[in-house]
Amino acid sequence: MQGFEFVPLGLPDVWLIKNFHAGDNRGGFTKIFERGIFLSHGVTFTADEVFASVSAKNVVRGLHFQTCRPQAKLVAVLSGEVWDVAVDLRPKSRTFGKWVGVWLSAENHHALYIPRGFAHGFASLSDGTVMLYQCEGAYDRETDTGIRFDDPGLAIPWPVGEGDAIHSERDLGLMGLEEYLRRPMEV
Picture 1 (tube, rainbow, N blue to C red):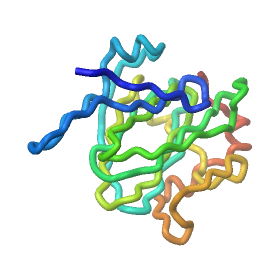
Picture 2: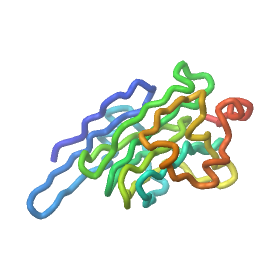
Picture 3: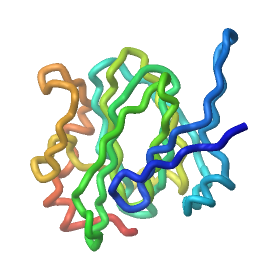
Picture 4: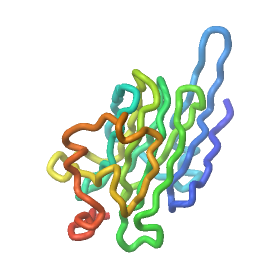
């Protein structure tokens, strides 16, 4: 079985991972994680929790993170397609406030590794999109928060028009980047 291809995305330690995939007339098989291969690329990821979300087309989720004990995430799409975003929120980082966006789909078999200190969000581009999240670190309900998807300081060009986007009430009430800087994440 062949390995993975790790593609740097211009933000420290954020990787687009082209997963191993094999398919034939029966269907397909995709490997999303192998500890030894990740370690050989300097990624010391161990999943503490794994979950999936289902989103309708035009749902925009995020940008989420925990201010205390932030989680690293490995995300992939099992069904459908998303435009996935990672934002560097480490105040002392030379890339603070910078973001990357990548296309993840069931067809391209790619994953995105998002280290601690980054916010995560995505836009669902098809109905019934199923996202797989593998998270390193425990979930902390008390410090689970985020920055608004449309913060002007980030200027992320979401591929879903504002009139078409579907957001949760929680996400619409998230803080802006300036407010975040008053109480940044503990990385």
